[in-house]
Image (cartoon, rainbow, N blue to C red; front, side, top):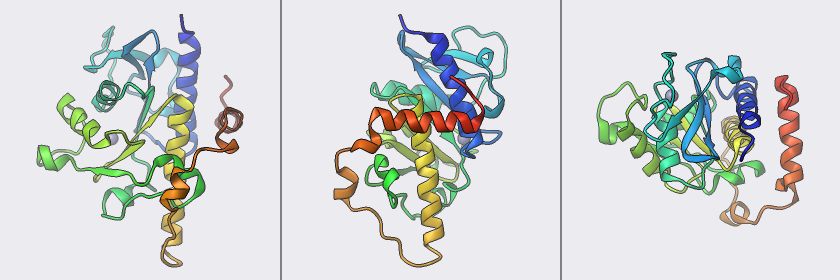
Length: 237
Ligand SMILES: [Zn+2]
């Protein structure tokens, strides 16, 4: 039996960290798959991530229906989460955000490719999902399961996907991984946007990106980063 209460605390921490680091604002969300039932996931009720408390966390099935509908408002873009969990058994946590640094890559054809070392985890580039290709004129929000499945199709086996005119969806093998990957995308975007003012960008080579992870990405390094991010966000685990 898994410690669900500890998992919920970690999910609350993920919400607070993403808000504290400017990845999410009033909008955006993070979920985690239920380890006791892989066909369910946990996600806050509709609330800004900075304000999320353990009691806000609700459980959903992969059709994105609440397991206990208590009438509280819920995020309308939860199909992003259920569709990715359905398509990707390897994914345990999902982040959706409209991070301002990422938006330039959602409104141009400039690809998001790793330019700095800690963005190697993104793979060689992030694909862009354009909701209009299949669904025409929409409000650009992912509000139906069909839209979620189409997004998951473009994500395929990637670490994250850029959503045209909207933001991105990020996967993780656990909550800290999804949070840190979201931060890596933000930092990589920042470096590219600043670098472009100076000259052409030298992106990482495929060899650099695909090199096996070294000591920096060991479990110890991961714990060090998570501890730092929790402290900055004022949360304790
Ligand atoms: Zn959104």
